[in-house]
Length: 435
Image (cartoon, rainbow, N blue to C red; front, side, top):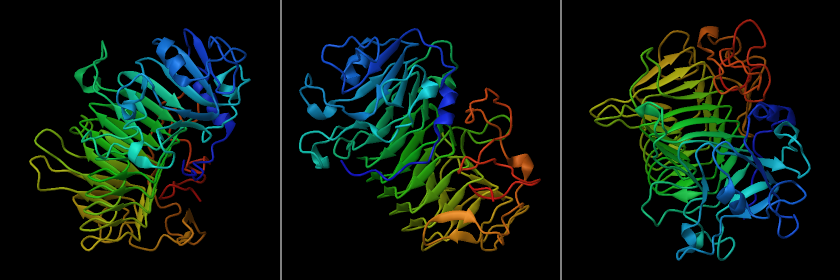
């Protein structure tokens, strides 16, 4: 398995956010446990994740100790069709040392609790599993590295995490797909036709404290592809993802705006760098259709050093489809991206209180953001940056994913990408990092 670069530095204290989850049963998994365990405790754990997933039911929790867990399933005629199915209502937590008594006590071993699709000849992606995790309905996956899926030769538009369509009783049609909560995860070194790291259709996704890196789609959406979905991404990093066509990191064909005029897919306090697309949208490609609009919003995000082969080195929002796409940028920094046409932003953009060359609007600047070091990918702000105290507090956004674990969902977004206070002075800064 390829060596993972380190994901966001997340303190164990942040794991407290999951401690309030109530479960009917807890199933324990530790690859180093004794043979024949019943999964009822850390002293008698299951040795395979599949054993726990087979027996767990809605409302249960599965606690997984750090190790590499192969998706291999010897019962299948096609070994590459193996996958971990996370049932609706199941909460899957990784990162344990193997002696904790609560989720809040996790050792934080998220990057070494690995769900791997590397089958057959190790290091040869041609025989890797098509997918690693499949979900539908409301499920939680928290504290894993999810790596080495390869669905390029299948024609199926999904890679490592496949949010399949399913009906959830009692929910309106808008939310009848996956209600996946993804947290404290690194999704890396996956490949597919589209959405190599995460693919959702009719999905309702809540993603926080995650890193998407080195994923490749031969089509659109190098890391993420969402079809007619609702999604919120908080405190996430997208780097070195690639799409052969459009949307180096993200492809959206989302549903119309909310009644209040907000896009249904939003990114808050996220960093996008060194993503690339052979076509348009080095970071993101918003493509509309007869039924979807491709609207998406970036709030307090930094998009830098991305590139596209045609248009929109950072974002391309298509305007030629029946329902036109549009990108919204607020309190963000778009800088030093490359493309033959529209080096930073292509298509239709609405921009407020951001550094975005070539754009106009309230609070929009074209001045250099003065990162600490562009060449070293340190996108924090120097003391002389005009991005400091140049955002809009009114656009800060709330905390519906409860990233600080205090149970308050209607407070303002509490953290920047360094997990420091998002508002350190009287006025919020632009970009993913508060000075």
